[in-house]
Length: 279
Ligand code: HPA
Image (tube, rainbow, N blue to C red; front, side, top):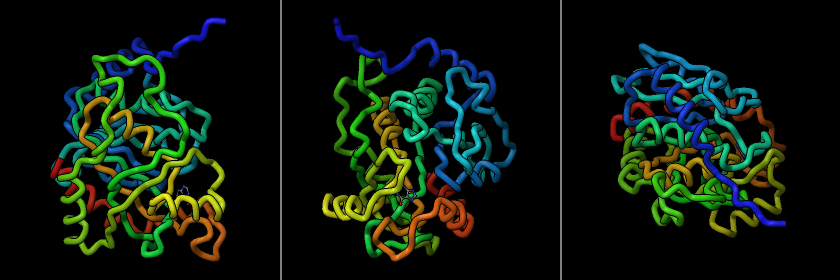
């Protein structure tokens, strides 16, 4: 049997989806934000907002996770217009990585230049605690897959994208500075991405610690790889929702994600508003 090379981007669907976004929102800003678990509150705070349900976007998979409302919201945050993606899709919902990259490809095809990615994450680093924030300095992909797997469209980006600086160095520095000025407990570290949905075992966390990871989560990396491919400027911010398995004597609960997000939402909104102004 002849093997088949997969098309990782369905161009027809991408064109239709991008056309839908442009029609719904008109002129778009330069910056979009992907809102992580529990962090969707930001979309509710946007002034003069306009909303599009993701079920209206051709080819867009439905979000099945509690705390992830499937909609895109355009609006103003402290005077800066942003496009917020609320209702991230995850690999553990059964999607392959090319599907996880679809929102990024839509954003890039609509002319978005800067991407702020946010997530909830478990702390592996012993100096971190729930409620702290971490600027993603670098990442480790433990999904054993890649959103760019398959044919490459050279119009979109190179076959072998350089990953020596996936997160913009200046924006990382600036985000740290803004956070500190706001009195937020800020760290800068390495995010390891797993597919989930089961949380990690204590042995896996010890392994990740030895590999150099500071936090663990089930998102972000597939999106960032796609964003780097499309030439977007990226900044990543993790909200620590819990200590990772074995780092405390508590079992993990998904509710912690929303509980901690609720506690830190003031800081989160202030931080993002200022970071967006810097993009
Ligand atoms: N592990 C994986 N993903 C997560 C965690 C965790 O501990 N916390 C929030 N997302």
